[in-house]
Length: 124
Image (cartoon, helix red, strand yellow):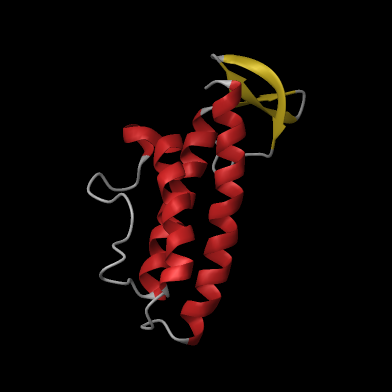
């Protein structure tokens, strides 16, 4: 990965987790309710960026890019897809970090960088 990719990864990952928390709370109240267009617009914007970060190798589903605004998805559908994206982000991160001196660092161009991160949820 490159420095810019790590920066974008961290931004989008944080946004995905925030959206997932919010949409999951909505889904628990009424899972079959459609997500409104206002919220869907922002979900789709973040999914576009997530697809760029993940690329074809890590993208959760090859035939999914964003939700259709004409056929509004349910909150449970959005929560499920956001969960899939978060899991794929973790796989990408796990494949691009290393442990050094008890701390975890991003690999930039295959080499340990000074950019710290947290321990992978699943060790390689």
